[in-house]
Image 1: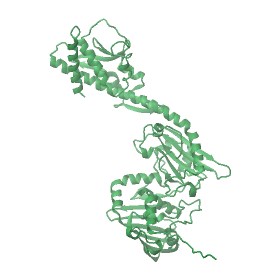
Image 2: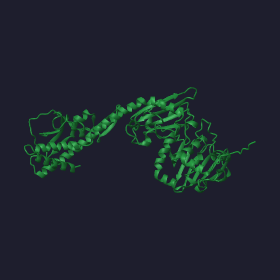
Image 3: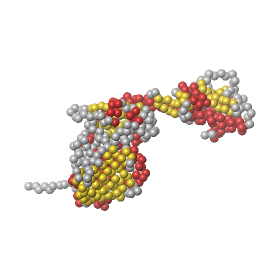
Image 4: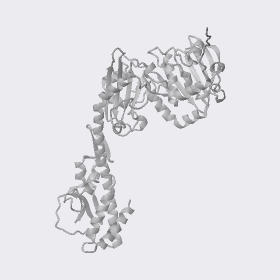
Length: 539
């Protein structure tokens, strides 16, 4: 008869290091884990103090607390969490204490449950020591504990002997840390957020009054005296909400549990930073993916770059639907693809509208560019002519022309801009704004009235536009009018551009031609070079 030997897993200390580094890739996610654990313990308030000067960070919550057995069996366990089967708990795996591992060398924990408490010290420097990485976990003592009676439930965690990387992070990126926490934590919404001026009453009730059949755990989180509120796009001064699409649907496949998605998509009206593009996707009110479009197919990249928003996913089995790092979904799960397919259909028309608004926005920006370019053009021509007349001691400042009798129907620069969509405004600056469901360019009235006008020694010239045939020169100078030919490709193709170089060149050719009528081609060439030199020197 054969004899068999029993085999067991042999977890080594290196596993703790790997899990700590790979599960929690940044500091906000580590604190997300601490807050989630506090909420699972019934906390309604978490107070975080970051004291780099005194080399410590403290996290205090008013939850039910822990007794010594809970510390050993739950907090210090790797896996096997009792919360895994609980639909009203955020945690599910049982590795939360590793979120603290890379912050500092010593963790002091004071906690009590119904008066039965303890004070413990955990030495993470012993747990993560590279020299003992192959040592079996069960052989390594990583801390000590004493039983203590406390009057109140709750937990206080103090991280001391902070690591150099921790101190450098908070000294250099503290503001980013706060903003990120406001995005990913299960905080209450701020009723003053701009988003609530756009959302319906139904969404006000869900987000602000928690009037829904879904569990939306929230917790007050105070960091260094700052009472954090949920960040929503639009809260920062430079964040505009051009349009919004509300999302509220339920999917059910065969006999599976129904999954409901509630959220919104925003057209920001501009290309967003990459970290802001896409949705903050939440399960149990905690951010899983902090940006991105899940596995959606809808929308071209240029449209997606303008879109942000938020999704709450209810009813998803997070034990299999969320990956171990809790920062991404399991895209092999059919439920995730059902969600994405439904989002594709819900957002198809929204992305079409984004594309159309993007095109309008581009046109409005072209008008703004043209205003700026022609303001610069008139200034450069004025300087060039002034310099030319001074150097050549020309007494007659009127620009000569070959035919006084030419009478060409004209459009002013103001006419061109208004036809393209420019609107006069009393405001002092040129602005591109979204008003009345369309993009418009607001141009100060004073600029519109004077754009294209040049004054030289008391003589006023005006840049105008006309149609005198594609076979004619792109620019003519007749009496006190500088005409650009709207039939010429060089004019048409470059009119709404922020580069006025070709318009300068066309003017120089026309001016040199008028100055050298009856002279040789060489005279005209030298005149063009002289003018170009002056124009270029003005750039």
